[in-house]
Amino acid sequence: MKMVVCGCCAASWRRCVVMSLRLLFLLPAGLPVRSQGESQSDNKQMDNITIRQGETLFLSCSQGDFVTHTAWLNRSSILYTGEDKWSVDPRVSLVTLNQDEFTIKIEDVDLADEGQYICAVQTSSRPRTTSVHIIVQVPPKIVNLSKDLVVNEGSNVTLMCLANGKPEPAIGWRMLSPSDDSLSSDSEVLEILFISRYRAGVYECTASNDIAVDTQTVELTVNYPPSVSDGRDVGVTLGQRGVLQCEADAVPEADFEWYRDDRRIFSDFDGIEIEDAGAFSKLTFFNVSEADYGNYTCIAINKLGSANTSIILYEIIEPTSSTLLQGPGAVQDGNSGTSTVFTPTCLLLVVLLQLLLKF
Image (tube, rainbow, N blue to C red; front, side, top):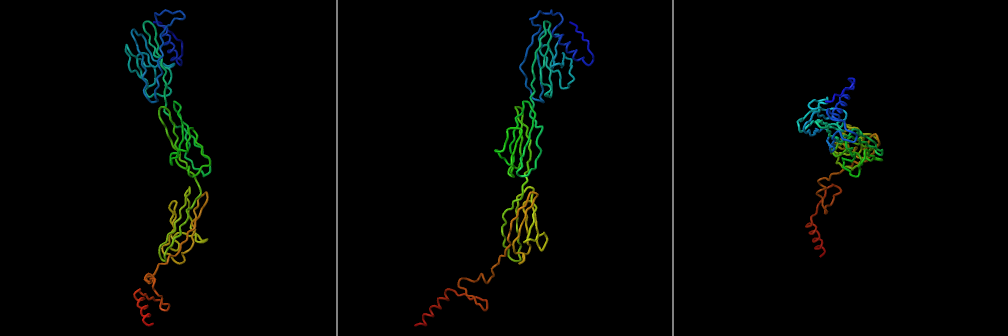
């Protein structure tokens, strides 16, 4: 065996060993130095191997008869020489080493493992190398995404989404909830000009490649001033319970104020209760009096503006029992306030009596 001597310090010991191994394989003991143009070794290039990040990679090469030395190398690093492990990486281990096969494995493959690997075999006749290029595919991962946004109606909005992956992922945006296919983008940026309240919702960024898909969402809140539904006038009988209702659409939610003419009304005042619940406000009269009838104003207010509507509380007069008994033939007695009801039969007798008196 040819002895190769390297003069090197401890820091470059690994490089020295690699050089020694290469010289050992290329110039084995007992082999004559060939003239220029003659091949000293057999080199074989295998097809590229594509593997996904996180999977286990198996590297195998055939041995053949009369093998004296064998090794697996990754670029400038030695992984194994025969049964001896040179790599300090715990993910690398020996699987098979016999006269026919030399196989190692690398678990939990990462992007740093990508590159060329060489299996070097020294036989009694000549050295032989087999090389293969490893391509590591990485699933997409969104690494930078716009935060949830709160904007005022009419503003311009820009949503950003950045992702890593190999192959490079395609990135797109869409309005997820409420769903709107007309609002989408096939790039990292989604721009919305003069945003309206109807564009508020959840937006989804999708990053995809041949390996997988990654999605994340952004919630977009649009503030706008209140708009109040038209008030419905309410008729209530004297002494009964009456309720006036007011509804406002606003973001953020509106605060409500009630007025009678120019005077503000507060809850628990003169038998009145005001109850606010989200977009609704109720003004309740528990015992309507004559003084309660009139025009009321509901005002909805938030930081962007206000809106109002008017509601009339009017009186309903219930019919009395005597009024219900009066029919088309009733005659009202102006003095007594009583009424006399003549039936059709009675009227017929009166007419006949008048006719007999004429003859």
